[in-house]
Amino acid sequence: MRALLLLLATLPTFVVHGEPAPKERITIDAHVAITMRDGVKLYGDVYRPNRDGKFPVIVIRTPYGVQRDGASTSPIAFARQGYVAMMIDVRGRFESEGNWDPFRDEANDGYDIIEWAAVQAWSNGRVGTSGGSYLGHNQWRAASMAPPHLVASFPAVASTSIYKNWAFYGGAFRLSFNYGWGVSRMPFRIMQPQYWHTESGSPYELSYDNILWTLPLKTADLAAGRQVKHWRDWVEHQSFDAYWKAIDDEERFEKIQTPMHTLGGYFDIFLNGSINGYTGMRNRGGNERARLQSRMILGPWGHGPSQKFGDIDFGPTAMRDQPAMELRWFDFHLKNEANGLDKEPPVEFFFMGINKWQKADNWPPAEATYTPVYLTSDGKANSGRGNGRLTFIAAQATGNDQYSYDPNQPVMTLGGNNCCGTPTIAGPKDQRPLEIRNDVLVYSSELLSDPLAIAGPVKMKLHAATDGRDTDWMVKLIDVYPNGFAMNVAEGILRARFRKGVDQMELLEPNKPYEFEIDMAGTANVFLPGHRIRVDITSSNFPQFDRNPNTGAALGADAKTRVARQTIFHGSLKPSAIILPIVKAP
Image 1 (cartoon, one colour):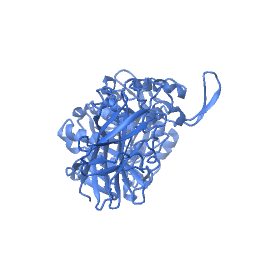
Image 2: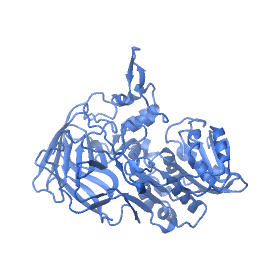
Image 3: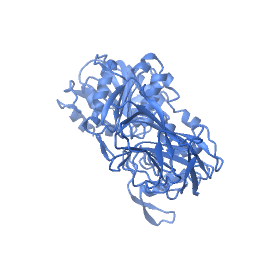
Image 4: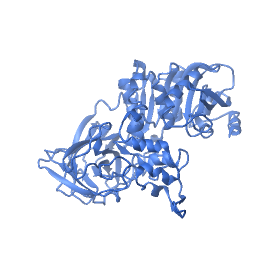
């Protein structure tokens, strides 16, 4: 692999996604050792222009292997444009020394690498960071330490809170991703069906899909043939406690001194990280430059830009050239090029429905009007055949809808915010196969006569009760096309014990009505004339999230389950409603 990289470095031209003709021939310094403050050595490759001089530096840190990520275009493309690009294995991964405990050493190690890079003979002392997903999250970790030589960062499709928008969401455990990334992939190979052995020694075939049904969760790692410490730590710490707060960057925006450019997709698992990263820096960044120069782009994507995702082709303009965006960002901040970046609004987002980009001075757009759309029915909203309705005026009479949630027969994941080797397909998918179930409540508006545009955060105010001590509420916002196609637009989940906050667990009183607020992240969509707005409510989304056993037991402790009887209230006394950020249709 190294020989291949050196060969690539000698080629006279190398064009990535239409970037300008390369300016530099490059040299690769392989297996460079960088000593951390505790003496552990991390190893990486340094890509630099093949001439004397001092250059700005871009640091990329990966848990997936320098040789794999180094063969990608980004470090080569950066070096050909006059940067030194460093690709480094994080602690305990591949060639780097130490023990890998995901996320927990990335702040100090990132600081040490940035400051090491700043004083090398080939460095001009101006350092940026790049990368997506885990490679994006560790940028937030390093930036929270305020390295003196860090100038700008581009964390794409990245989490800002490992608890709130990676391992958990609304207090519910992201089962398929956590297992697929944290146990079976470890984290670089997708689990394929294979033979495992029972204690008796008799073989049987067990696929990843089947493994995810394993209970109790606290020992489900053994189904993959190993005991995994970080998996067990994640399951043990079911609330936002000190274990998670120690690595949470949403608690540390005030300490970040450099502008951050986030990039996210409406259907990415880390959508909240992309949004919260921008809004956190805009409102709480550590200085005026960091606040005013941070930027965000949101597209109709999953875990990176695309034109088609799920069941929808969003048109050729949906696809964006991420390498070109990063190069422009670093040219402005690290090379001081007057490329007009500072003259443009800091936010750009894509309106689904009309497939059009929009720029804004902030997120959410200042014009957003938060408008409740109310649930109502004649008592039978069960399935798409029921009589659930959405109205812009709350019904006077108090009513309710009921359904049973059986954890052994959960509503299965169909699209939505997922990614990365899990056995479910993310993105916009036709929800009608789920809407035939009686344990899915379906509320639809009348046909729209005018376009209705939304852009910003979506929330559900739900008045509900269950006959047990805990359960889940899963909500989807759906755009129903004239032909019946039901496209999921936004989704959210809440584990009921966390209704007062993910750091405040409190079990329910059975059959007592509560008001729950369910975060559904954010989106931008135009519901067109002839379409309907729809809300689906149920209590499971498996295997994207673990099944709540309805027992009130701690996460992962229970191998038994119980059927829950659920009640959703609506009407003037208990006005369940989805809150939509309505804006002027472009």
